[in-house]
Every structure is written in C-alpha cells, then in structure tokens.
Picture: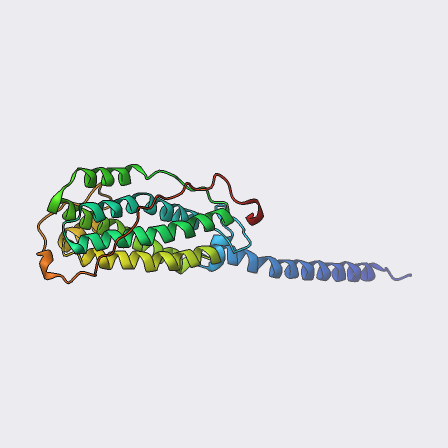
Length: 256
C-alpha cells in the first residue's frame, strides 16, 4: 500500500505559517515605537506631531510660539505710547526714567519681532487690543501723582503677566528664531519690571491679588511708599518713537 504524502503538505504549511508570524512580529516591532512616541504626553515630539504645529527652516513653530510673537508686537503698540506719556507727564525723575526704558526697550523689541514674524510668516497686528486701549485711556485721563501711580501699577501688572509667558515659551519652543526672541523679550521685560518698581509707586499687595485673579481690566490703585525714598536712575532725553506698521506679508526671500 502506497504511503500518503500529507506529512509533506503539513510541513510546507507549517513553514509558511512560521514565516508569516515572523513578518508580523517584525512589522509590530517597527510600528510600536512610532505609536508609543506619538502617544506619550510631555515628550518633545508631541508638539511636532500636533496639527497646530508647522514646519519651518528654523524648527517646528507651535501655536504657543505664534501667540508669543503676536503678544510681543501688541506689547509695543501700547507700552511705547505709555512710556511717552510717562516722559511727558511723570512728576518724578523715577517715573520719567521708567518711561524712557519703555520707549527704548520696545523700539528695539518691535524691530526684532517684525523681523522674526516676516521670516516665519506670522501676521502681526497694528493696533493694541481692547484691554490695552482701555489701559491707555486710563493713563490719558490721569494727571499728576495719580498718573504716576496708575502708570507704575498698570505697567507692572502687564509686565508680570507677560513675564510668565516668556518663560514658558523659552522653556518649550523648538524654533530657534522664537527662542532668540524670547531671550530678548526676557531681558527687556525684566528691565522694565525693575525700573517700574524703582518708581516707588508699585502696590505689591494689590499686584499679588491682580496676578492671582484670572483676569482684570485694570489694577486697583492704592497709596504706595513715598517715591522720595527711592533712588531712581538718572533720566535722559528721548526722541518720540512711532512703531512702523507690520509687514502685510512675509518677505519673499525669507519664506520658511
């Protein structure tokens, strides 16, 4: 009786199954690291994979990066006029010095942010936002010591808020242009915080309450220390600056 050959057929089938299993395992090994990397929160790659992040020649540009660039421009649009008012209406040398620092700092910073925005293709505003316009209106209506106090407290509150944003962007951005802009903004904002505090008018108790609040249109103003007790920096004469408009579109040669 002739022997049956099924054993050979079973051997071929078993060998094919082993090959298929091996290929499946290899494919899973290749796919798993990608899935694992994309799923992990808190990794540097998470923002790269975000649909709100765009690729540029200077590194990934996140939504936070773009918001920061916009905020730097907005800060100059209202703080530079506020500095001009302080130079004209300030009743002490310390307040006028603070105004000078705001003018110099935001003239420099605005030039930087317009250059960065042009290279990254980020559109910039040409008008302060509603809250900033309200702050300017408050300063426009104030005179004498009332102006000094409101100027110091409103500007100190605004700088305290943006200081935390600068730190967050500097710590997390993957874009080299945004990182350099954050360095310049950090230096400028810290200088402004110090010179505003040197005016002697900052109410730190109220400032702490305003910073803790979710939002406030303008800080309350109360009596502060006698500014005569503070040794201010020497004031200097400053020309009047006007911020140029933001470019309507990025420079063609600097497209990412």
